[in-house]
Image (tube, rainbow, N blue to C red; front, top):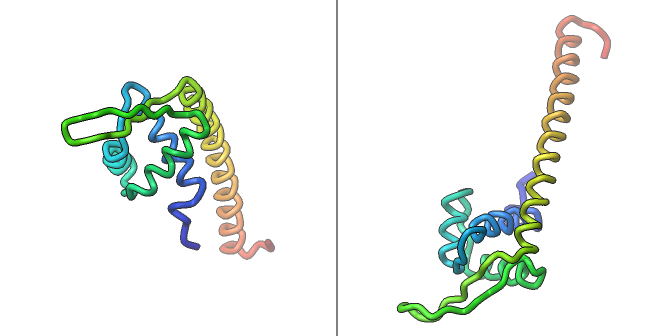
Length: 125
């Protein structure tokens, strides 16, 4: 089964990366795209990044502030206090989930090892 790289979970993870990128200073779409690619090796299109940012803005996780630079208008985004809380909470949830997944994987491997040993020794399953 091929994973859906651009599904809901993927976009949720990208949202967390964006929040981390915005933690210390505001940024704009293209800069965030480059940072996402650098951090997790995923290239996003302008449409994807701005769709995610727009959704995050609606949810109150980021605020947009327009800026004028030499190259033209840029829409800058900054993390909100709600965004900081969301990132912190989600990381705690992920840490808990990873620990749980590790325990499940150990259990599955132990069962698999036992079944493998039984099949080699001829013991009934």
